[in-house]
Image: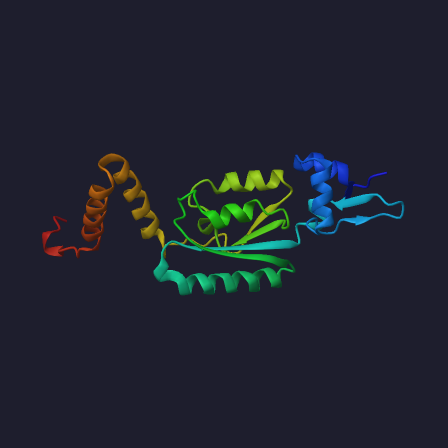
Length: 202
């Protein structure tokens, strides 16, 4: 008999899209948190809702290397937040990358990790500047969730770096790599130039 909060290893294997042997190897290597033998020798696995959700993965991100200190402080804040919420932090991932870049190896590796149930981020933009709702839908389908520490906070600290990443990407496609660097630099200089109020027609 299976109860709502636990399933047999065979059911777990089907849900994960893997063979029974692969599921057994995960169990044998301690990679299925909470899985155990029952008195009759069958292996039972807790459902994500009952076991994985309290296991938290922290994801911190900034857009550029000069923000490295901010990245460390962001991760520390998230760990403190997760602990205060009663989560068990099982992974802390820090990444320097644009929020509009979908090629983030550390985030990719984290999303493929089956050992956590709640992803903790400081605010939505730290995970993705676009498509945050898709992350929620896909993780929910896996029995996971996202906990946003500051849902009302607008992040503008690295918005410019993400904007420049978009400009550079389009410039590369249109003009080639060398020309793109020059055009991107001109955009930076133009945006950084002071505005002469005397020339303002208003």
